[in-house]
Image (tube, rainbow, N blue to C red; front, side, top):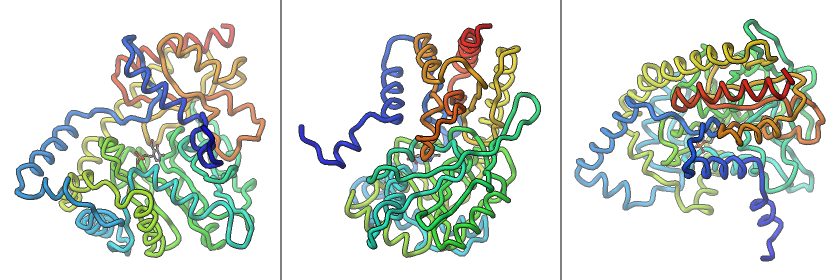
Length: 418
Ligand SMILES: Cc1ncc(COP(=O)(O)O)c(C=O)c1O
């Protein structure tokens, strides 16, 4: 097969394909696997009951099911959903936005492919611009989205040690430079893989930097407020004219329905809609149909605040207790979990790489993710820290998380030679 440059780049093995392969294989094998590697949200019974009810309502409502499956939405996405969401965001946060500020995509991952390539890459004047990720580690899913290679540039973080084995990454503003070759700044908040939530001060500074350079500030809000609300610190979501906020229905419990949301100024929304039309005619609308009533009534907020957030909060506290117990004297720092559903573990001066640790854990049926994939934009930086971390999800069954943690601790101690 003779592939184009695009064909080669997008079919090459990447961190993400390794993750997806492991995930698929683990879930379809007969062995009992502790799947702590994926980004799947938990099955939360109360949420599933509500979603099932929405489905019944949709089926029973004369004509609505037929419209949900029988019509293409406009390229911008389902009109009623967009209107309800604009109204909800205005009501909740006071943002001055309307339907002209929202577009839907087939999952927010697709939105990142559009956005990074809309702004970054070769420019009409012959120059080349990059997307700045001001806080590494950052979401693995960004890493390979550039049509042009080397689309990202990142900055090492400042590390603050906290009590109880915890630490927290902060943006190192001393290191951060926004040159003319930066097309956009992007952060995930809460951050996958670390569970970090950038402080309001950090966000304000980054936002001002972007504004001063007349470039967009992209905030990936896949886990944040107002839904799914997997965020344990009290920070303020922001939106302004130069901000592009992305959201998703996935972490609420609907990853199968591939519904991503982009909130931005109208010219960005027009561009996203146009790209939707070229790539997929229109975004899939089933998620929008299923959720419009819950968005309109505001019930989606209660689902987040009263069910989803407490569910994950309880799970993370339990996982932390197990980790501290099992790790004993081993060197294991845990990034302060402030949101999302991952624990980011740092084994300082570990004699083996996290890729080797990943293999040893896989041999014992525990799937985690080696940390080195989570440094898009720092690929060429020989920082040892990149090979000292792993990401584990705590969203899965408690028994799998507990047993997985026990095995991780055993393998880590073995690696340290304890
Ligand atoms: C930080 C972050 N952003 C975006 C996504 C993409 O999610 P989706 O395409 O399901 O909306 C994910 C999925 O894991 C994520 O963790």
